[in-house]
Length: 136
Image 1 (cartoon, rainbow, N blue to C red):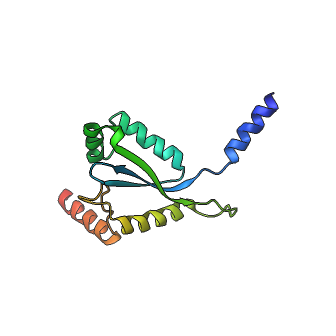
Image 2 (tube, one colour):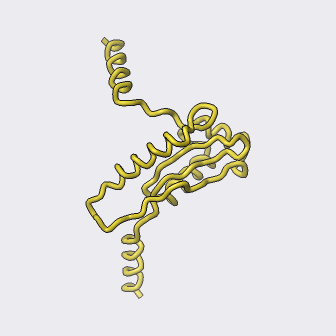
Image 3 (cartoon, rainbow, N blue to C red):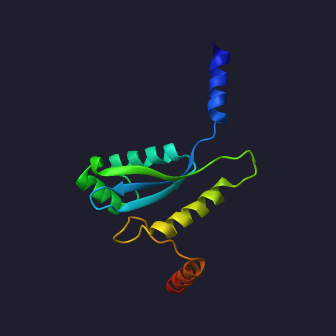
């Protein structure tokens, strides 16, 4: 019996988790929040849990969830990465590239979505320089 449990546990640990991109859709306004996850099911569960506990990092999404209720939101997987046998493949980088493509395609910012635009390298450096000048 112990050997079976060990084998089952090992099989579970060795099974690749689905990874990819999903979104949380506000069915009333059609606003979306795009998310990338190395473990899709885990990421979806984490966001559902945070929203249900009023502890989600995205305050606008949280406010709409609180006002409208969970029945007015849908979780949709939009793209998946298939694990490949190449053990040296950097799935985080692959996922970041995939997320960038979907952000460009869907533009889930402002009135259309809950995501915030990510700063470019130049914008980030400029902001850091401004903050440095203020603290001097």
